[in-house]
Each structure stands twice: as C-alpha cells, then as structure tokens.
Image (cartoon, rainbow, N blue to C red):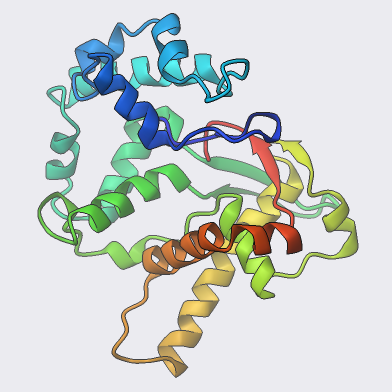
Length: 256
C-alpha cells in the first residue's frame, strides 16, 4: 500500500503495481528490508517504476521515493524494522491497526476539509483509503487467519477511490446531476466535488449493506470489504461497458 496510488499519467496506462514489485526483486532490491528502502535512489526508482512506454514516467515519482524513505525509517525506529510488529501490537483489531498506521505513517492520513458549496457547512472527512485497503488485503490474503485475523473487520468502510464511485454510478446507485457530470475532469485533491463523490460513495455502500442484511440472502456474509472488492472487480471485468457509460473523477494525489 505504500506505493498503491496514482497510476494514470495523462490518460495512459501503466502496468500493475505488482509488476513494479517484481522488477524490484529481479534487480536485486529487497523490498522487505527497510535498510535497503531507506537508501534507494531516485534513479533506481525511475528505472524500476518505468512505464511500458519509456517516454512516460510514472506520476509522483519523487513523492513515492520520499514515502519509501519515510516508511522505512519509521519501521526501523519504532517497529524493529518489520510491519508484522505493527500487526502484533494491535491484538487482532482492525480499528487499532487503522489508527496506528495513520498515526505513525503520515502518507496514510487521507483526510479532507469539506466546505459546503454555499459556505454553510465545514467539517473534516477522513476516508483513509490506503490504510483500510492495507488491512483488508491482509484479511483477504490470509483468509482471516494469522496476520489477517481481525475480530472487528466489519468496522472498515468501503474504499473511496475513483473506480468504486464510477461503478456505483454505472449501476444507478449514485446519480450525478448535469452540473457535476460536466465537472468530472481532473481536479486537485481536496476539491469539493471530489470530497462529495467519495463521501457519498461510502454512504452508498453502507446503505446497500443495510438493505442486504434486511432483504438479502442471510447465508451470505457481506461487509464493506467484500462489497468493495466485488464492485472493483466488476468494473475491471466489464471495463469497456462501464467506461463507455460513466466517467470517473480524476485527482492526482498520494492517497489513491
């Protein structure tokens, strides 16, 4: 999750983040060693995070390097150089791990100040997407056991990126008015439109879960993690249909 953000430079596709990690291994760079990550150079990053088209550089490359250095230093200073220490001190609590990650690792603090369009409402909104995906990926990868065992996994929300709102709008769960549809272009992180879309996305998934718990198949367990996973995978499987029918908001930032 340290590197899992912003992979669309000027509309061109980059390879999956997994390919970059494979390149790290192929070039003899041990991603699991914070000492190695703390000394990684910009040129090494540029080589590993190269696009299939070498004329295109992955966005926010210097920010990625800074985050890797920062996270490696924090792991070495506070957690014996290993993220499993973070997991262990949280005693199988997803909520505790969420707070620990956001408190200790600044790049995971996905928060925005929301100002209502007419200036009548101001509040801070915390989506914490990458921190929640980090925990959800542990839960899914370990199938709820070992380092993926969390007694309160249902406390996580959906992950408000740009794809999940897009597919919710495709299904008609979200409705964008004409004015908003015109504004679904690239905008800076923290804009009122971005915050609204992401916030409503979270609420839509929660409401859908409530409906399923009342009227759905009682034998099927659905929490925000599984719901989000379904929506994200659906969009990936039916990308052409979704893209043709519904635009997505675009924001360049380190949070998703």
